Image (tube, rainbow, N blue to C red):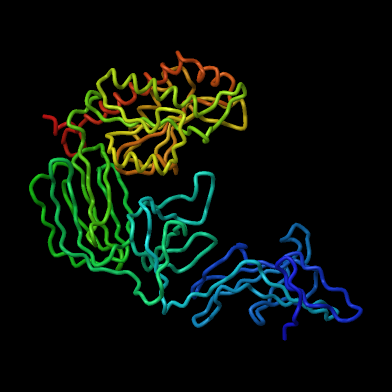
Length: 500
């Protein structure tokens, strides 16, 4: 029987018997030490640190084992245990309680600061995505760019939550696949709903004067994942929780970008759409729901693949209160990126391009607001300009970044031309998990012009003449990207055929 004790710093300690000294419990925690929701089959991991040689239990009798000092760098008194949650286990947002008995029979109890809930699979916990920038993560990893993103979702998409760690919920996408969603982009629903599933209806494919459309009727707004793949160029969309009842696919007049349209049932609850593209270079796409119909809008190449008439978005990184990196002489990233971006705007306008700026002054503009603005403006291409920094003053050079392999040709073209300025190459970086590289609606690339942390690079970055040289290099990089896009694709279609 647990003894009533005193709560001190998250540890509940039972008072010792007369003449006995209470054991010192350094910590008692779940691992990870944060609030959790667990389902049957999940592992609850706990750790307690105190004096060696005791008997420690939790969850009304489950034992913790004291680790051998060879596993703890020589430290004694570290106890750990794993408990696999069983069907029927109940725990509702409570701390984990531990009992500690020393060799001389001193008893103490402690509890974790974090709270744990055991979910009942017979009462599915559902949620709806909210906002226009909801997204899923692959896992719980974090760095300064956030967790690695699986993809973005429309609003009001229904998710089946089967776990929680801290501020992220685990999403059951299918019988075999899970993802994680931040709590700030979902709204929990009251109990009583069914886990989301749907049969697919027969879908239609058609084009209007601007884009090609694919529309798939569903009975619920299910989560999805999309990938732009190359060689051959195709868009792959997986719908989780969907099972085929598609008996025909109607392809109407007006299609210019979509070729073969097929599907396959990867798993009983994963429906894959494969949309082949007629051009080697993809110019973007957008996925959203109209009611419960999933709609995919596939962009076509610009009418003429040249700078004249092209709509180019130019993003000057940072700004306002977001200073960015600072060099030894005091040069600030937000000032340098704006100066280079304004030079690039002049270069592009001279070539006849229409230029959209995410900022034109020293203004604070949130990255999410930049993405929303660009979605509304719908550019043909985006170049985001930044300045790099390193903890070592010897590191220097230029680099470019892309997220989706289909947009790699843009970053390569920019990288090659930036190296023509005389800057050494620092590399072309793919799968870059940055907000401005996240949109799929248009080819985009980020240019880290040079290292402001390097004295030689900083001197170049602050030179108006070199700023103009870099702007010219980016303009030439865009021209080379367009030239590359005119090359023949794997099926013999010309990228510029729509202009003929």
